[in-house]
Length: 622
Image 1 (cartoon, rainbow, N blue to C red):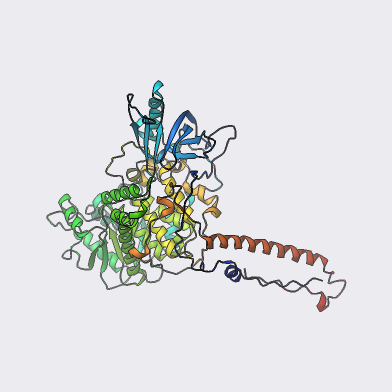
Image 2: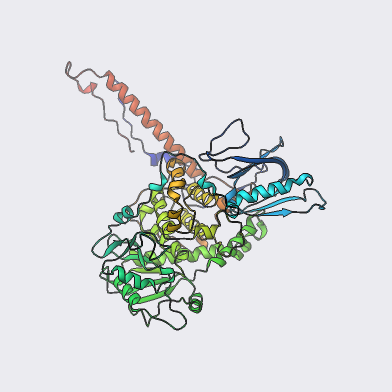
């Protein structure tokens, strides 16, 4: 009889297998490799390949045209290829034997299409199309001047990249993909509030907005103080911008302090007051039986909040709100953020200027804005976690900076939101259902690239989440690929998840019935998006360090199109994944040996087993 005793520790194997000096998981692995070959492909998750075709197609995707072009590669020079245009993507395959180039660009990513050169243009490759994308890259194609080849391509691209301008449906309504998970069922507001312990004696669920009559940019279901009647809510709505009244986002499970979100009060230049609004905020303050003041975080710089009085807005003054204290968080508006991202693109695409990199990055102020958003969210989380007071958060209309602050604070406070499905629920709740204007900020299917409403607010939020995941590498179930996939499909128009500005518009268009959810793609193949270092913790509050020394540019997102600058994979993460696979293999072998050994044991009813015949206990540390 074979005796088997196995005590197998992944931790010890991990330490034995690691390269010395790699044990600090959160160390910044920023070695850059020079890659002479230009070859990149975007993810083809869910794409069905037809080997008889030169282009992959999704169910519902139809090919429109194809054309021979010269791709003006900013890294390797002109490359001859064939471009295929469908109702979903632009797909380029190189025709040159020494180049393996493939470009796979969803048309929703395109922001602007311009004609390059004219009929009389001279010079090689001076006639063609310039395409500006929303995901930090530009494309340039040279075409032959004869036969209106550019005009045809320009018109087809314009038609399908900007379908709303041509009375065509966005591709998400044509997508016929099927997944084994329905992502639309991920978020149920009643279940999510029930998970938080709501309703209770101090907070109730109201359906006053079920037909979106109180506020057309809020969800149908709201959580409000138990002592506030629906009539009270209607009166408060008249004094809040866009009728976006203070409603609960999150409640602390122990000290019962809350995070409440809303829009600015309509104070105006004359300093108007509203007794119902003042009383309502006092009711919120009293819900956790604290005698301390209600803390109000106004996301705007003080000077902007004062300036908003001229347009009828404003902020809560000490004179009117005696039991509240107000703090300004100095986060700039959508226009400042848009210009900041443009500057980032200028320094990362197509070339990175190594000699002046730090000063160039500093001049964009992008990381400075990331710092201010994170700092504000930390203040909200700390105030609630400590039980000092409940917190009310607003900016101007309560759908941009407010969403950033509430969702990041909730991510810091509640470990549930750090899981894959928990994060999906957080995005659905604080961003999608509460009316972040995705259609206006991203411009889905819209040709007006210069629209002043465009702004990278959601990208900024995801960047903040990435910064947190770098500082707490074991705290999040999802990996970097998960975050990049969300951003890619923020623009792609393949899914209905981010379409339209608010819940009422999505219901009117029957988005959940007529489109596929992004969460269907992710949740049907979760292993690709899992962080191997994830350690589930229940009550841990995360406080990231929001100093400039600890923040960094997200190279794998912002500079991913440059083939010469490629971030080296984390060797610790790679080794850890290998060890997990090895662990599973050993466990399987152990089980097989146990079964084989059990089969050889004599029947105890026919012959008594002696000590030498007993099968020892197989023990592992898994």
